[in-house]
Length: 383
Image 1 (cartoon, rainbow, N blue to C red):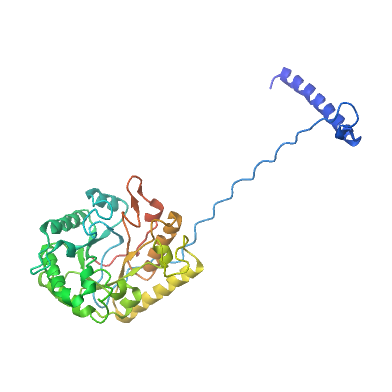
Image 2: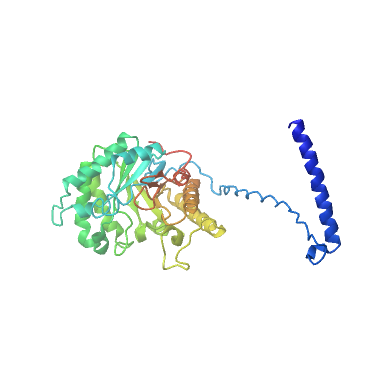
């Protein structure tokens, strides 16, 4: 500041103090009402207070489940998955592309780069096969499934080849059991030279008329057909009632050392699905309440009890939260549920990559805070 500026400033201060003193005197004499005193009042401006600072964001919730080592079976087999994602709504649609975009080879590179080490590959073989003996699977469709599988294997990913949406089998298990077994005979033959990191899942989510009363009679011939060409390959066995956890707890399993139990988890359903009209409320947009965590702890206790009682090591083939729910709440869901399963040694496969329950969105890429929060067990079963 220059001397000239300092002098000008001191003069200004003096005039300002004088004006302020006159204003105070005028106010004390009642001149502020403008009715007397001739010159009226002098307005004095008061500076506005500074706005309050923005609130500090709340810290992330503390982890409530801590991943543990992978459970090792005393009975049956187990999968070596790690961090796994479903290739959702692509090859299990009636035709590839009916439920969103088709699979692209770059999808495998995306999945590997994000740290996933396994994929579950749902495929609707039943829509691409003859309806009369010998029930030949369309060679183009078979080659397509082989291509995706081989690409994943070449990138070091484990693969579950999963027969999905065989709706006719659910409506008429006895009538479709011979076709079901023959489809698996062909799949087994086509994949017989794949490495042990490729496993089979006989049928996704048995439901309707395929229930506990006929599950073994329907699935065992298909398992036998696989064993002709794949005597030791790991085969996943879903329980009835849409592969519900409680159904797995009581489901029968064949006497086979390489069968792996699975279950699916979409609770609370009014958060995991876009809507659940059978619940009140039918939809919600939050997850992580004390009740949610208590329910999840009940689930993990059931799983731990199943492992202890049967010696089997299951995995969660599906879990997820619908893309219409807020991403922040979805991130909490995927992180919490995957950690809960891992806390009792159970690996899991998130639903899904894209087209539905998006973890990846074309145009913007991974939903990072969801995909990065997914965890698995601290160790993997031997390969």
